Length: 183
Image (cartoon, rainbow, N blue to C red; front, side):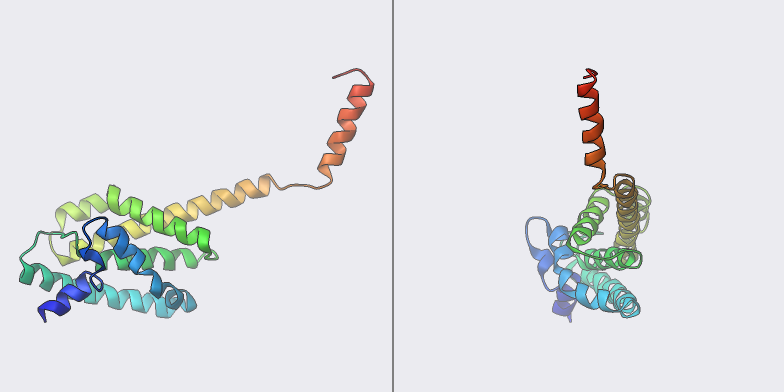
């Protein structure tokens, strides 16, 4: 059972790397993205089940391996947080390569920086629930960031739509001002 706790908590050992285990754990969640995006209800159920399994495995991993409050190799929380960010984003926008990258980087940003409420959860809940919940909070903040970015991009794009008749009009205005000597 001890190895099972390690296998799940480190998301099939992806968290056991020396450098950037959280980032690699987030990337290791990507094979599940097609399933999460194919059906949002199924996606939510998978994320919920991973959350519950993550609580169980992380709690036992900490006990059996006698590790710190939030060991770096435990990345099941990153998997759940990354998938939640993508699921939330998919509810209100089309997911493409750009939005996946935006979800990935925004989640990693909030997971690493740990602004409030992520920092509050990380400091005050010292068990497997705290380990899992701080990434849920980071996922929600990442989703809000992705939504705002996409909304502002759409507003900007609508305001700056290219009108293909516009260059002709500008040329006419410019050429008439030259002929009048108003350069």
